[in-house]
Every structure is written in structure tokens, then in C-alpha cells.
Image 1 (tube, rainbow, N blue to C red):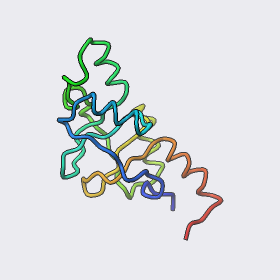
Image 2: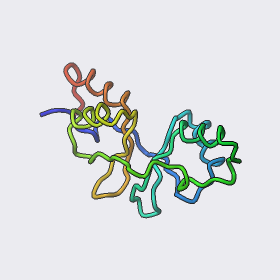
Image 3: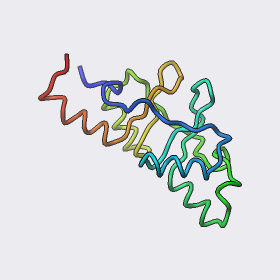
Length: 132
């Protein structure tokens, strides 16, 4: 039996609402030292992802960050992974979708985030370390 996503995902996860300004999101990304975050409704349904790359495009388009909302620029075709999924399933998502993070859900509700680094850390630790 392989390692599961819930064993290595990061939590709590910081998410933004679709209505948040890109300036506020940028500030949160910089403060937290992260490169992207899920966009979710208040009940936890993931509706998108926003990344530094999305913000760079806004800046290069000459728009003011405070005038743009997450829903205006977020990637809406968001891939998620279930909390009980095997790490290998997540690795396949990273490879096929060329992404570096994936929101983790439990019954459709956001519960964490898994980065490629989280997954690799789990793979490295699995054969030699046991947690009881």
C-alpha cells in the first residue's frame, strides 16, 4: 500500500475567494512565501487557482492590481486530488498537467494543498521511516 496524499499534504491551506483583489492576493503570496493558491467559495468548493504567473500577466497588461479580481484571471479548469488518493496519482497529475501544486479535497471540500515538493518528500521518507 502506497503513501496517501493526506500523509504529506500541507494544511491548513490558505485560499482566496473569487472576489478578492489581485493586490490582496499578491500581498498574501509574498507574505506566505508561496507561488499560488486555490480560489474557493466560502463552503470550501474549489473554483480555480491563481498563481504568480497570472499576476505577472495582469501587470504586463498594464492593469492595476486593485482593479482586478481573482475570478477575472484565475485558472477555472482546476484539477483537484482526493485526500485519500495515492501519491502516485498526484505525481501523474503533476506530470500530465504541468502544474506544481494541486488542491486537496475531501467530499468536494478544500482541506489542503499538495505541492510537488510535498509529494517527493513523502516518496523519500516512505521506505525508511514509519510514523505510529
